[in-house]
Length: 132
Length: 154
Image (cartoon, rainbow over all chains, first blue to last red; front, side):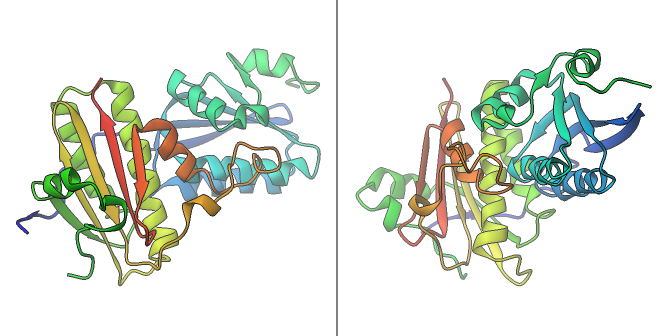
């Protein structure tokens, strides 16, 4: 069988680098995700979620307006943090996801676990916790 | 080469696939998630060049990430001495990808539906469902150690 065998190009990735940023908002935490959460960096999201859950924060707001991609390991990282948070009656809410990410949350039915809001203010006003 | 082109299993009775496979490009990478990005970037460049929509490119990227992650974690069990083989062809009409690992395979029908009550809050098990939801064709080999992915350019 004739086969074109070649190594992967060494060109730089065209996707945006994945970053996480934590901001405190009263007793809640805003975790801003940006870029592409791909398979090689998704463990970083799990670590960030689990670390926040270990602090027993009552509310994590996942701000996703700059997140353009996430795969199942990253989604699983969010769930892992949520499960730990839930033990202490904590919550996870999603804010401003791009349409493709919102579709992904709906398709997986994770939007049943994490309610989705358009703005941080809207998410906060829907919670019993408010900025101090 | 340890991983032979798949000409049985999912492709038995599909002579057109076996014929198409001859013209596929092939990339072999170590069982490493960072290295596994190489085939993805190369395929996505061709997908973009062939005029697939942004949504279609998102779907192909997602399915390929899921297939590569499954190969890395479940097939090759994170063993860095093993390899992942990606064969693909991108045309203006369709994208065909085959991902093969060196694992013992699995039965995809035994993987529970992660959208059913009792499974939604599980951290794992969404990869296969996402591949099937975003692509036009997803087929696993009988041995369960390779998957074929097809996305049409509609």
